[in-house]
Image (cartoon, rainbow, N blue to C red; front, side):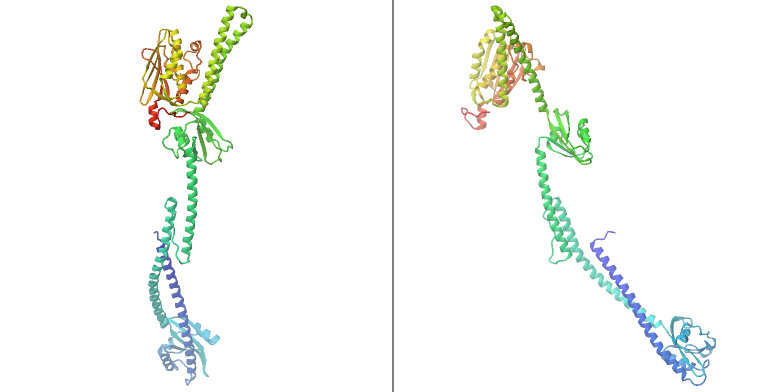
Length: 605
């Protein structure tokens, strides 16, 4: 049975009171019995001396029954049993026996009190008497007459003492019971008041403990009395204040750590000693394509990557371990995992970095270096070979010299175009080639392109078909827009066979202006369309070089259009050929968004 504080206090106090009452009763009874026995002994000592003196006054010789009358009368007056015992142990008189039985009484010479009286002048003993069937106290003193000597023994029943002790015991029992009743009531009240304070202290201590879970501010009441409970309550309050400060510090540090983790672009996974996930930030969820953090799940269930599991399983290392792997996604990513060094049995931290773009740029850089080297090497080799031929004597032959010089000139121009395109592309990508974005009419760049490329189209008997809506104004840079159209129209003329057609279409398109350049050429196979705007990419490399292309025109177009906040794509044309289209924001849409007039410049990028 589970007792509360009140029950325990009451049980303890009741047990203590009961034990104290029992011990006190036993002590009182022992003391009282001793005092009563001592009183009886003193009385017997006086009466025995008086009986011995009385024997000296009896006339005649002392024989059995001669002193019976005197002894009987003395015994009745004193309410005692008086026995006269001769030196040989015979009983001469006994106040409790008739005269005729005296001769049949057993010899009393070996009684302890008789022997003690003969030896020391007085004998006292207490024992059960079979004659009177009761506990008796015997007191014996010697006497000496001229004709005889012996011992006078006086005895008294202890039943009165026992009765008195029994009565006293009942009185003590009643007093103890009454005291217990009073003690029970007082103990119950005391335990109630004491337990009430303790229960209140416990309840408020629990409230303080619950403050760690959000119920801050609860404190124990400290009474005016400077007792132990008040001191305990004060200690609890002090501890609660310390806990509040600690929780506040920990909460701030936790919020700061959480904010740092959530704002990191790298994914962070925390693992316990068993390589189970204990923490994961938002970047890690996004990198791995996981909706909810799998807290408590083993890492092998989250990332089944042998290289990563191998570096995580390494223990006791002092340097960071890293592994690069491809995460299938979607989307497909290249991730670099770094594991920080931790104690042999401690937690581990895994940092995931998305290096997909870095690897793509490295691949582009390698491709660019290889393509640029290849593109530069061809005209340089041709120029060098023709110059060597001219130097070897071909210069003296006018007809052959003109042919070699023409080849040198064509490849020098090709080399110049390639270098200029590379410089333009570099300036556009690094931002040094700034554009002034402002409302620009489409008609101006379209007219300039027609004037510039009309002669080339006529040489191949290619017809221009122009369909430009009126009042088309885009937000862009006039020279950049002209550069875009020149590249697209020039490519269309290059790849359109003689007698074909090239068209320019410009029209409104839901708050934007759509520019389309189409041709009737061979078109672009579907397998090449996704890479058309990459640097140095050609559908037919040999034919492109023969036509003087550098492979950078469409890449420059893409960067210029994106700088003007537009998009550029290609699609096949019905009936054959290709359509390259550019979508740019219309000036009216930009004005409605920015609250500016179309004639005002919109700044530059």
